[in-house]
Structures are given as C-alpha cells and as structure tokens.
Length: 413
Image 1: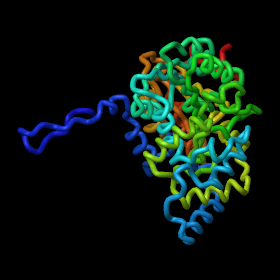
Image 2 (image 1 turned 45 degrees about the vertical axis):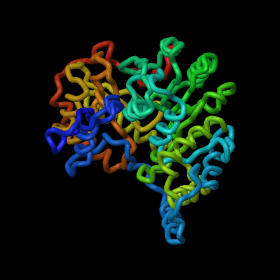
Image 3 (image 1 turned 90 degrees about the vertical axis):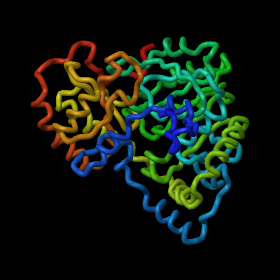
Image 4 (image 1 turned 60 degrees about the vertical axis):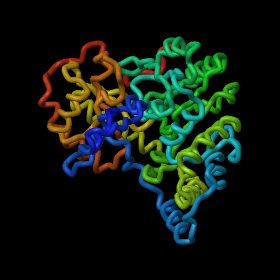
C-alpha cells in the first residue's frame, strides 16, 4: 500500500504514501463483500440484526432535523447526552469534565491513542485482537506487543500478561468482553493489570463496547471503576451494538479531566464533533432507560453455539459480547479454509481467524469468528445451511488440545 503513486509524466518524481499504512491490516474487504451477498447467511459482520434500533431514537432524531438542529453541537458532545450516559455508568463520572461523545468507538480509540502515544511507544495487548486496534496503533505510532490468549478456549494467562508490561511499555490496551473470542476479564484480572500499570506509570485503555452483554450471571467490570486507577484508566464505549445504532457512529470516551482535555483536543481536530441530530435522538432513548435485552441475546448465543456444535465443529461458549469462535475437530483446516467451506457448503459467511492475528502458530489461525446478534430468521437459515455441513466432514474425534471447555473461565490463574 505504500508504493509510490505512478506519475502521469514519466520524468516527474513520484509521491509516496505514508509508511504508517504498513501497520494497517488488509483483507477484510473481501469477506465483507461476501457476507452481504444475496444468497449468503451473514454471521460474519458485527452489524446487529438484534436488537433492533429503538423507534423512539429514530423519531427523536428525525424530529430534531425537522426542528432545525442540523448544525454543529459542542465538540465534546451534547450536554444532555453526556449527562444521560454518565448516569448509566457506575461511579457517575462528571459529564462536563470526564465524558466525551465521539464518532463511534473507532474514533474514540484513535483520539485516545493519538493523545497518549508517541512514535515507537510500546503497547501491550492480547492476540487474537480486533483488527481496528492495529489501524489505530499504526496511525498513533504505537508498537504492538502481543500476549496470546491460550487456544482453543482462549484463556487469559494473567501472569504472562503482567510479565509483558515492562520498562518500555507506554500503554496497555484491553478488550472485555473480547472480540473475537467472547471472553470476559474477571474483576481480579482487571485489577491486577491495573495495579501493575499504576505502579509502572502505564496508561490502561479498555475497549468496553460490548459491556451490555455479559452472560450466565457474570458482570462486566470497567477499568474506570477500579479504585486507585483513576489517573491512568480510560474506557471506550459505544451504542452500535447495545442499541443497534451502528450507522449513527456514536461512542464515548470516559477518563479523568486531565486525560479528557487531551482526548478532546484530538477529537475536535479529527471530527469537529459527532452528528448533532443523532445525538439528540440517542438522548431520547437513553432518557427512557431502555433495558438492554441481555437474556434474549444469551438465548441466541446458546442457539448459535448449539448449531455449530451439531455441525461437528468445536466451539467456545462466550461469556460476553456477540461472537464466539469455532474450528474443525480434526484440525485439518485453517480458518481461511474453514470459512470457505462454510460458505460454499452451507451458504454461511463467517470471518477467518487470520484477520485477528499475525501469529505463525497454526493453533492461533484455525478458528473462524461467528456473530450471533442476529434475528431469529437469520439463525434459522444458518441452521438449515449447517444441517448438511457435518455430513461432508471426516468422522474424527477432537484431539485433546482442541476440546474447548464451555465452562472455562477467562483466566488461568
């Protein structure tokens, strides 16, 4: 991507693209095109079919547009929206000095990293990872140091992660509930990582986009709610999945006043602020205190895991979020091959594990990510497609290292 642009005049010097692009992952575009095909059951994209967008939010946004609220709002975000979001968060952050409304969680993360990192700074994060993390790090100049989760159940090795936080580490980037594995960090793990960061003077940033979805009696724990971490902790949130408003691009950053001032400087330079009428629409639905359908999402998780297990794939049982991983029992296919087989034989689109890792270890690459935030009709169509998939697979039991434990915790302490 960084090759020189060809000049229309042979003798003229060529203009080169930014070296930052080398750190930005490619390859997702092909799968996005496949997932949106008319004959494909899409379990690949994170775009929610369930829950559905609240009608009250749509009506309020439309009303705001008709009433003339179509110009800039305060760059930090509509004051009522910031107050509404703050009221929903444990610890009740100050909406004026500790909350910033952003253009989705993607911009929230980029603005945060640009505010906190310098070129070459080391950032510790887990692998597999959400691909946009690498793009945001590349733009901010961060150098990733990966700590692999342990396949196939993706256990979080706390001691290994703590050991990775060294003298060169500038920032730790967590993601809980985790995309793509669905693992949820325990309160003990969050606190242990946070205290290590605090002792070392390291920033602690956590992508908490899927915080609304924690299952089987578990609870999400925010890094910003841990005592003693206030000066280093930053939480990234979004309404794309919890309220099915991914196209509205509304997210937020929660941090201390000092950090918030820095993030807002970058945020304003990048965007000038999030869309004004959409902020008003979201405020309306938050003021109604709409209950997130966690139990209904858990039932969809159970249904999706069961249908892929019936198709003789080894699946993780996610503790949170909207995704789980699946892989072939005999290990004969990597994630790209399995994704292609599911597409051609079952008509079901998923994402291959190669999009979420740079590791050479084949165990890190033989999974596919399955999204289950889908309508009943989509899940039924997927079950129909998968019903004949198992018959085409060899009759082999899973080797011992591939038997994922549905009850396994997120940590191996």
